[in-house]
Length: 231
Image: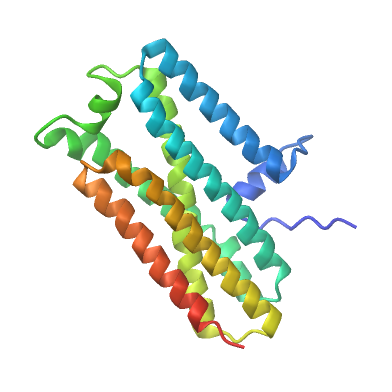
């Protein structure tokens, strides 16, 4: 009997990993590979181009994205194991709205970094990190890491919204209610982990407000969802 979740009941991240032919590395292996590939690339480019200050920021982003991977996997596993209504599961996983939200966050971030920020007084963040002529391969890696991060942030947004909707819409049995509360509080944990990024945008008011506002919003919505979950 195959106990693996069916596609449509997983995050897109899980579906991609699970669909790779011949690859059976497990959750821990997938996360370890994610960290290793990105971090080795960051350190190699920092050494080649002498960008050690940027490497610190990159490592922080990789750590937060990896934490997001762990949270996504646990949230998915716990939700599928719980007896939540089918519409709840379909809305959370089958809609793939987390990808849409991730794309919106990523496009907004790229617009800020390459259009808005350079038009402001002072030195742009990309110039501060990579110099006036950033190496193309370094920018490519940076955008890849940022997309990885934005996708997980989009997932956090969507999980918070669905969690609140489910708490208002449904009543659960005792064990299921406990699981749903844990999922919501786990989302709070991931939001708090993103505060690791704040020191790197402390002199960037827009990014500071965006990251800080996201942390506060997800925390408030997810804590409210946990509090409203009923039996």
